[in-house]
Amino acid sequence: MSFEKLGNNQEFQKVYKKGRSRANKYLVMYVVKGQSGPSRYGFSVSKKVGNSVKRHRVTRLLRETVRKYDASVAVGCRIIIIARPTVAEVGLDEVSEAVKNLFKAHRIWKDSEK
Image: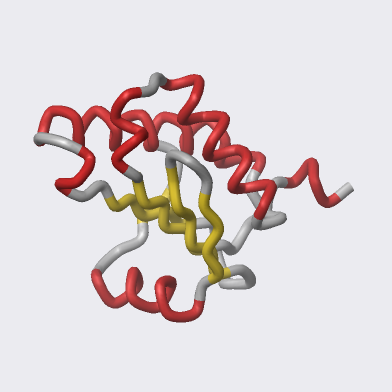
C-alpha cells in the first residue's frame, strides 16, 4: 500500500468538521487542504452498502483506486471517501471514474491546476 491512511477517530472528526464535501452518484468525499506531509485517506463503507463481503469489496476497490491516483493528487490533503449504497453494484472502472471526478471537483487533481 503506497498511500497513507487517516489514523484515529479524532482525525476523521476533524475532516468531517473542517472539510468541504462534494458528492456524486456513488461516493461522498470530504477534503481538508493545506495540511503538512503527504495526503492521507480514510474510507467509510456503512452497512447500508451491503453485507460484509460487499463492503470489503467496495473498500478494496476504493483502496486500489486511491493507490493508483495518489501521485496525481495535491500534497497535504486529508480525504475521507464515503461509499453510497449504489457503489456496490459497479466495477473498478466506474469507481475509479467517480473518485477522479470528485478529486477534480475539489480541485486537488494536479492536472486541473494548469
